[in-house]
Image (cartoon, rainbow, N blue to C red):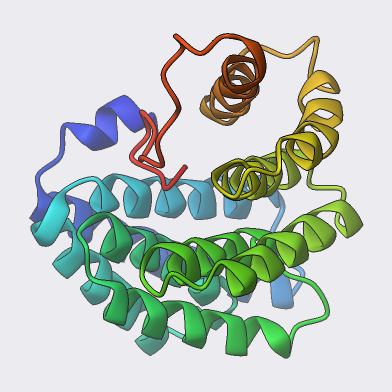
Length: 238
């Protein structure tokens, strides 16, 4: 299912489709347990479609958040606990974008507690990055924010999740630039950014490039405006 097709759905249609996919995933997992699943990619594609629906719901503001909450509750009832931290991360980000730090903190706390009991979780680095943004923007605790960003970078590096590592490094770089740490900023971000030299520009790469350009402006081009902390074109906390 394409994201463009999902974006054309109304909130109730999104929830109905997600509910259908959840039942489908449950059935596929049952087949996998009994070794009757002939095409494992069906499970991967279904989970990807669920993630896309959650992402679009996040873009729908208050109504979308209500559907996200409903969808997460439905997933818990269906026993889809393995995916819950990822969906909680999307919910926390939606809360942050709609200026509800208390609920964002609760969602992240639950997600991190659940991840702590797992040997590895693909989105753990992003959970720590979002936690850092919350510490920074909601609590003005820059030290705690830096620790969270560093942990996000460490986790992503250990998991060889280069895109998540770049995302965390961009957040750390922005924090250091706000504190006047220009040299550290370049040392952290530039090598990671240039390691994607042959890749097409994604929203994460664009965020990193803008931060590097802002550094150039701070060190020699005063006319260039500073980059502010905003959500990017995908509605993600940048």
